[in-house]
Length: 391
Ligand SMILES: *Cc1c(COP(=O)(O)O)cnc(C)c1O
Image 1 (cartoon, rainbow, N blue to C red):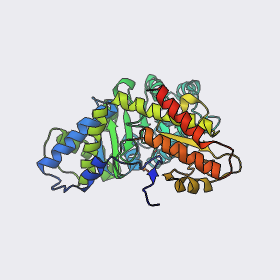
Image 2: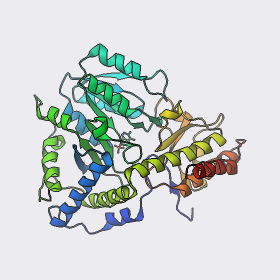
Image 3: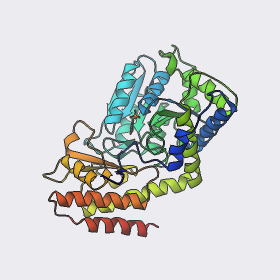
């Protein structure tokens, strides 16, 4: 390709030029005033992004999985009971790593992939055991494109005295998320998804109840590097503008995070969630015009940061190559039970109408070239119309 392809996968995403420029800046000393000020500023911004004024944001080198692992390592002790509200592959992963840290994990799965377990079943599961220490939920499971009702699930967990841990890796800074108002005890994410920063940052926001549970542990956290105590101390110091050291931070990525956080807050959280909604709705109109069926069964449970779509009958992953020949990169399947039957499109971060229309056009053209009886221009028109209607 002579022109650059447009990356539309569920993370990593396309980055704003200002963010990429920040990655390349000379970063100086990791305990210098200038860097500490930028780190502190990024952390204060994250409080607004998570809407967690009473929570402590943490940022360390690693991917989203490390942020999940830290939460597990710090919140559970051997034989603690955990309920995983399971909506796909990343809920399975949360269960696996909780078990690795000694938890007894019960998975509550929906009848069919592409659904959320009904709230009534979550109530029943919580009432039956009555002693879950922790409930986990994946806000957007990137393997199914399912959006879980985090607020409603958190309310139930709290009513039963359990902590609530949210995997918001594919949601934070894209979907609506209100840590304080919804009473979320720990929220984890990563840089390369809707936060719009290159991969390499594990991010978390730890609420007061989770901090309390962590402080009251009977046994020490088993991995020195993973112990929140060190990270809490150093992050609190950064926010106060004090020079502090625990482990060398990834300076260039932190600088990029500070830049991206600034852009996100300049847009405003309300507007940002609305834009993700609009873009998702426009793409849904295109998918309908192309007769593509989504993995999530219900409209209300479809993510706004990505789409998971079944291949039409007779087509397979060779469609992805065709789409990339039209200039757009999308992702294959991830959930082992469905892997060969569907593909995924990311639409989070800095996406606007231009990217959405290009994606609708590329997917439509590729389908038509592979013999599907669809009209790519009708798909683009449907997306355009949805965008105009929601302006
Ligand atoms: C991407 C993702 C992860 C894993 O993040 P990595 O950065 O790849 O470790 C976890 N959960 C969800 C929901 C994700 O989308």
